[in-house]
Image 1 (cartoon, rainbow, N blue to C red):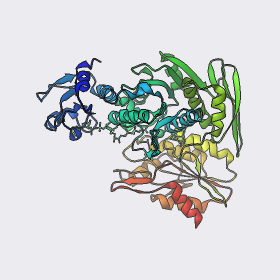
Image 2: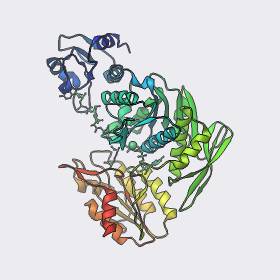
Image 3: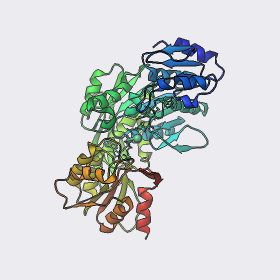
Image 4: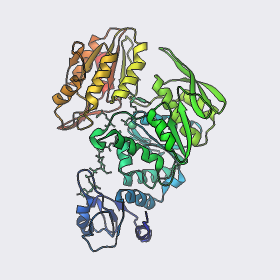
Length: 477
Ligand SMILES: CC(=O)N[C@H]1[C@@H](OP(=O)(O)OP(=O)(O)OC[C@H]2O[C@@H](n3ccc(=O)[nH]c3=O)[C@H](O)[C@@H]2O)O[C@H](CO)[C@@H](O)[C@@H]1O[C@H](C)C(=O)N[C@@H](C)C(=O)N[C@H](CCC(=O)O)C(=O)O
Ligand SMILES: Nc1ncnc2c1ncn2[C@@H]1O[C@H](COP(=O)(O)OP(=O)(O)OP(=O)(O)O)[C@@H](O)[C@H]1O
Ligand SMILES: N[C@H](CCC[C@H](N)C(=O)O)C(=O)O
Ligand SMILES: [Mg+2]
């Protein structure tokens, strides 16, 4: 893509501002017209011009304003490249490590950051829970998993200005589809897994996978793909890679595979042998669940790509803590065990329930719901998984957003073969109270779907709500 007239304009401009929102345009800004999901930025070029835009980049139709302009074949990609140019191409000063996949992105990004920090590398983080730009102000709550291109490039600029040397970025499928990472120099990228999710946006699983794959066919090319070989989609991706590859697996410890062998899981501890290129180190991990060993391999692969030594990585993994709201135990001295987790897909729920089932002496009580205005197809599938592993399923509201909460619960209910062990309590606080009141000391309660979230969103907007605080308050009574 030849953007030289736009780059020339930016280079000659004192302010170097790029935006795709006509409402934000200030005197001299470069406006990129993007066709979105709800609106079309091309309809706002005149407004951008009225607000003082000095240059327009667009993709469709004819230019309605008499301004210096450039027509491109992909204005979303242009937006990324130009935003990064305007921010001084910060990714060239940073070792950027990205992770995509349906589940595990936040966990892998957080583990990778912890590994790099332990090796003395000042590392930023951009993802679902926190953004950490290496500044003295610390972490801030994230608004999106992967921010819009203009914000993302600015965040990288701030990270580099703060002395950050690396950054771990969660790349959501929406972001990849919308080219929010365009123009970023990515050193290595990990792929965790693919399962049914976000079909409201992508329509088909093939489109969803194609969006994820874009990270590995990025411009400029990435150096290394860290790929989960236990996932069929991971194996397909591995065949297509044109860059270097670190494949990882819990099952295959052939030469050239970053592997976990001799996995030992007991109710109180998890350990495994981390193996790579003929070297082996024992890791005792603080993270529960086999799927979290897979996440640790992904983080180890990214850390290897960033130049860390395997021994250093194994030592680091022992110290790594799970991110907030991922299989997080709610402190409770009298039992039962109560956990909060962010499983909001059937695959995630299955992994979590498979982890908790063998360490539960009594009954497994699962509280969950499904977000509104998001993929509807996962609703009955989550019910099916809950029924398979739980003794009691309590279905409740997640974030209904603008949808009718009762319709969501009806759709979830369709996935149960019998409603004998199912309670339907739409108020999430009441559902959590019920689960805890039913639980005997030997039982486990899992509250799934909202993890770290500190709000609940319905048609009226957002109100404060935390699964963890709600459970804590109930158990303190
Ligand atoms: C569905 C979706 O992904 N929407 C994203 C998309 O917005 P959009 O395409 O709807 O934008 P639009 O409103 O149609 O507007 C199109 C263009 O016209 C411009 N415009 C519009 C109005 C106007 O007056 N003037 C003007 O210039 C807009 O600035 C925009 O450039 O592009 C915007 C800018 O990048 C994003 O902020 C927005 O994310 C919304 C807020 C969102 O909720 N996204 C979610 C679904 C999302 O992306 N989630 C993933 C996580 C998923 C996961 O965890 O797996 C994430 O990365 O956060
Ligand atoms: N490797 C994995 N395979 C399957 N399930 C996983 C895996 N890692 C985590 N999970 C489950 O998925 C949930 C979300 O994990 P995490 O936040 O790391 O994923 P994510 O990809 O960042 O999700 P999101 O797309 O919502 O940001 C966890 O709470 C857990 O239930
Ligand atoms: N990243 C996911 C999070 C879903 C979390 C769940 N609590 C919900 O609100 O649906 C999404 O945007 O679909
Ligand atoms: Mg995430």
